[in-house]
Image 1 (cartoon, rainbow, N blue to C red):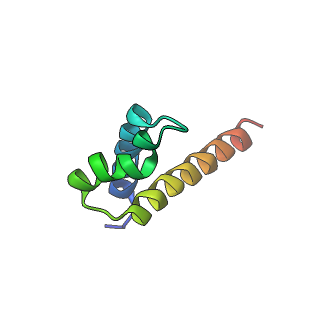
Image 2: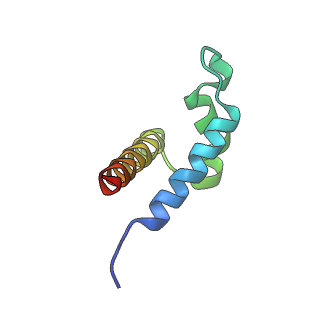
Length: 74
């Protein structure tokens, strides 16, 4: 049985959904750090840097998947 990070990316997707629901640019009460403090940290118990790294890793994974889909269509 191999390790494939599926759980890591599932958790990152749920974090992204919460972020998209509450985030408002230029509103400091609804910035990413405030969302992490009020919604992410109580549920998942991760630090702020882990939260940001998870969102970045998910964005990278989706970009790679999109790239492979484009290359397979050719």
